[in-house]
Length: 278
Image: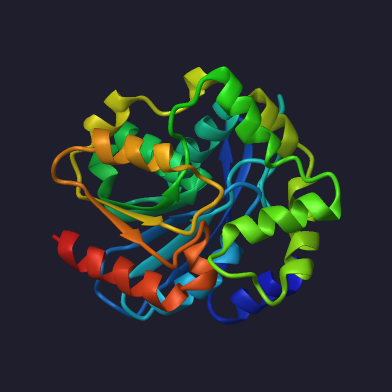
């Protein structure tokens, strides 16, 4: 199914790029747009790959000059890092890959794990980021006990746990929830994903200083129906983002608005791109 989806995207003008990094080859989907808005980089969530954001990219592509959707190290068609998938190898591989894929200032969109990755890239390469848009961003601080409990919610070792996880992603039960649960369980069962989750420590999460130093425009969308992240995670972003940042709470958004509300999300992303265009 993944290969069929990838082939369909190639038929619509996307191409696969494979760039070397110190932790392995990073795969990314890239396509020219038909508009004059800045290029957009889409950073996916945990276990997901760029092609799963096709519904969002299809809607913004007519208006932007280019779309780029990298697979995180150990995700999608990117190689598993040589020394295993960890917080460090994921960050290094993504940064080195984006440094090669991005040749002009871009709008960076990050969802879930892609949210913390987007924040980190924006702090490390501020000159490359015109604006930062986050949807249900991960990375809020937790102590060791909270983190262990949070990680356990991603251990989908049977269909019942996977089904509960899928239900927590959406505002309403998805009509294909059993199929999605099967798919999510397959993705989370990939080599390295559980190792990544088990390796994360409280010191690997975002600190207030990382948010406070963001100088570019920042726009955060937080779903009131998000049952993967917690209210205190939202408050961390609200309290520590710089004064120029905007945080919008949307009642019917869950954790994956690119799946449940792609039209609304694309409209907001394009509006943000217009505001930050130079």
